[in-house]
Image (cartoon, rainbow, N blue to C red):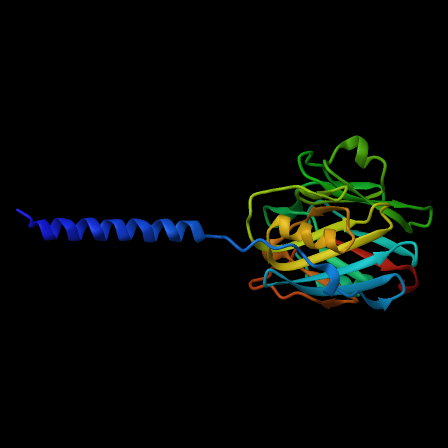
Length: 267
């Protein structure tokens, strides 16, 4: 038979192990919640109609580019131009199309040896990929010369809403609506987020190495964004400013879907 001391020792060991496991589980995937302080985020002039800023939030790096449609003329670039396409390098896309800003955009899936978008891709009035209604999208209101006048975040990829615009790029979920943060489960990954100000004349291109949806929304809200949606992220996360990559993600992959703005005097 076990001695009283052996029984006591086993109980203590079991209790200590249980406490350790409980502590470990409570600490998993958590970060200290903070309020984003935008006072240290200074916008830097890049060129007419284009500004950038960057910083850290809760120890994680982020980058943001803002385009002002009422200060310069930009043409939206939505890619791919065909339903089935191959993955490409974003810097090559940015150089070939002379984009002022360019990001990876719509999520995609394999189709044999090809890749195809998952969700709406509408380029110059032509629907390249069909909508997935549960996902969100960003749409561009353009004039007869294809110059963007405003951008709109669509909560769902509904056909009647998409029909109003010639250029639409699908993403995942909306995270900001009229300055209200939409809450999701906290998962930290590289992100690309697109957003607008209240009247849609300013477009925010946001990238980060590892944030939750809510953290992205907090930063963008502090920067003056009122509406935003999440685009494809993870190892797809890419953002180019004047043809130069800003963010470095481990194991980054080439992608087939892109969204950019081309300054009218760059063509």
